[in-house]
Length: 165
Image 1 (cartoon, rainbow, N blue to C red):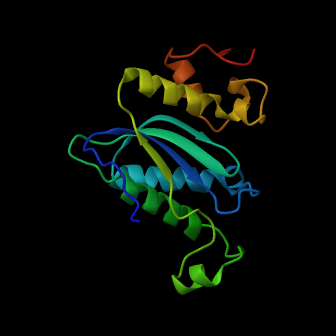
Image 2 (image 1 turned 90 degrees about the horizontal axis):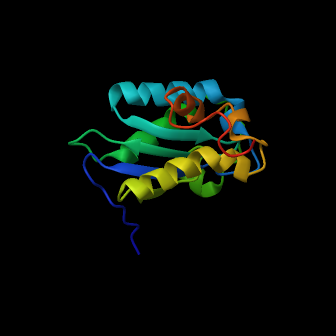
C-alpha cells in the first residue's frame, strides 16, 4: 500500500516530526542548529509558522504555505537534511539506512493533518502549545523555552498564565 498525503495549495497543516531514537534529546540539545535549518528553508521556500514547539525527541508545528504552494514534504525533507548534516556522525545506522545513504537521526516519515476550519485550527495550535505540559516537561506552559507560545503571548493571543498556573 502506498502512503497518501493531502496536498492543498496555500493550506494550513499540523505536523508531528519525530527523531528515530525516541530516548534522545537532540532537538533541544541542538536547538540553534534546528532554528538555523528552519530559517534557511523559510528563506528559500517560504511558509508561515502559526505554532511550533520543540521537545527533546519530537516537534509539533502548524504551518501555512503560500497560496500557490503545496510542497510541505520538500520543506520537511530540507529541514531534516540540514539539521542532520550539522550533527557529528555518531548515531547507529541500520543496514537499510546505510544502503540508502541515510543518517539515523529522523524517522523517515512525519504525521500531517490538513486543518479544516477555524475550530480545528485552534484545537491544533492549542495542542502544540500545551504539549510540554502534557509530557510533564514543565508545570506551566510558559516555562518551556522552545515554543511559539511566547510570541503568541506577546501578540495578545494567550495570557502568560494560560494552562498551568
